[in-house]
Image (cartoon, rainbow, N blue to C red; front, side):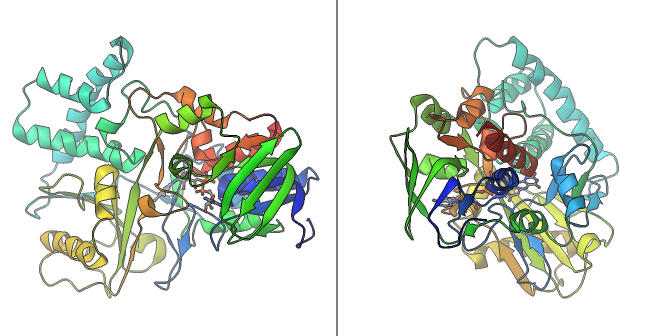
Length: 427
Ligand SMILES: Cc1cc2nc3c(=O)[nH]c(=O)nc-3n(C[C@H](O)[C@H](O)[C@H](O)COP(=O)(O)OP(=O)(O)OC[C@H]3O[C@@H](n4cnc5c(N)ncnc54)[C@H](O)[C@@H]3O)c2cc1C
């Protein structure tokens, strides 16, 4: 480790999220001296386990998506972090009036989506020009004459697979590229004691300077000089891991400016949002064993997807997701407005005499000044090549990592991790 008072090193790593930690770990293991500069007062970035309600709850990532061959699975083993499988099959669905959906109705919805999506997927190959995923759905639906009820059900399902997975609505996703990402096989698991076990494990022994907000990155043939809120640092090379949202806001100045190919990619790629609202109750008033609770309310995307945390934590906790436009809209509401919206929906499903929550956690990732969003996506007319352009080194001095610098696995913890290892290898 470098001298804790030193302001120079072989390499600076800008950002102590999973990508920065992976890069710093890899370089340190190879014998480089490395200083990690992090704006927040904690490591982990979009891995953020909060324990203020008396139990660990993840405000950022929760899942290892696909455990087989996934590097995060290996890290979980290395750090002794317990994981628990989640099974989306164990679910209950409610209609807008709070009645449970009749048997078979959810499956019909899925089948309707799959049938329509088959035609949409054909358009991915057959159209000469890109368009939004929504425009493609609209074209297929127009040729079908769906009933009002079927259209609502279809839109609900489209919302689930776009806004709640990609953090962006179908109108903000490229028909050609929206699902170009690759996946690891195997099931999905979460960390009952928190995802930060992974970032904390990686951070051990690294020279990480917290509260260092990077303002300017100057680079050239003789290396890199970084100006932060606390001082100046120099190194031969640097790994840049700022989230796409931060790069888009240009809250860090690069001198000279980043090349046009990279700047273009930053502008074309999209930064979406996924927000979480956790509610801790004095007792359980829902089915203890069920994992997912869906609500097909009148307003698409509002309080539609809930997760029961009782099986994972032993505590009466529910969590609701809001993604895409609805995720951004949630951030405009006060905490009180958000809590009353949640309670209105829960009363519709579980009756008027359910208790008030004893604790609440609300994320606002879109306003987070060190993220400005949850993760990246590919809007119409952007492409997978933009992820490659973002990952491209500049002048053999600046190297780029982060979820948006991973073409294969963007928007994920494992993608960010692998990009950090890749950037360190390039150096
Ligand atoms: C709500 C939510 C749910 C998610 N769910 C999952 C999931 O279940 N599974 C999954 O695989 N992925 C999930 N993700 C995505 C995953 O969390 C991210 O892809 C991954 O953590 C990104 O890591 P990173 O290192 O690229 O970026 P970050 O973790 O954002 O790290 C970048 C670091 O740079 C720092 N920084 C920013 N600006 C400055 C500055 N000016 N100066 C110094 N430091 C700065 C930030 O504070 C941060 O620590 C989710 C994300 C969110 C927000």
